[in-house]
Amino acid sequence: NWNENGAQNWAAQKNWADNLTFASSSEWELPEISEYAALFTAYGNLTLVPQFTNVQSGLYWSGTEYAPDPDRAWNFGGGNGYQGASSKTTQFFVMAVHNGDIGTPVPEPESLLLALTALSAMALVRRRKQ
Image (cartoon, rainbow, N blue to C red; front, top):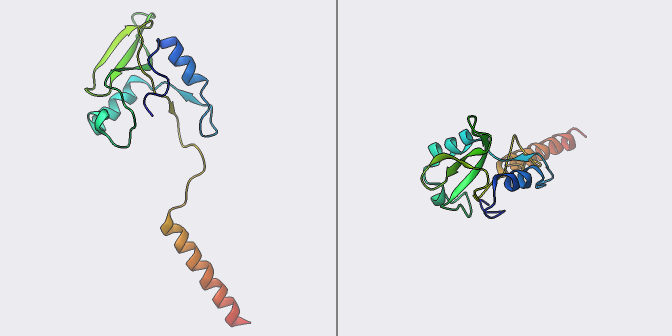
């Protein structure tokens, strides 16, 4: 969900992401500006991608601070790919990202069927040997 915390300033959004616990993990953070750019390059207008829910047409904070001015940070527009640096007191939306996989992987139905077929065959072979 791309609008979990509403529009707030950079410090509030960073604090929210840094303290988020979701899917048994507390290792969440604001995405870097390059991560937003990679998503836009891959999918285009993110407000139209069905896999992403509630993407706002407004701007989103990134975790990337603006090097020439510590009072500014990079932001990103999900609808048009805009990237710019704004005062950290400006209120923008946020999403949190996690590095790596979270949770327990869900087995694919085909893999489960294959495993059950193999177990059944092994049981049949064992019965015939007895």
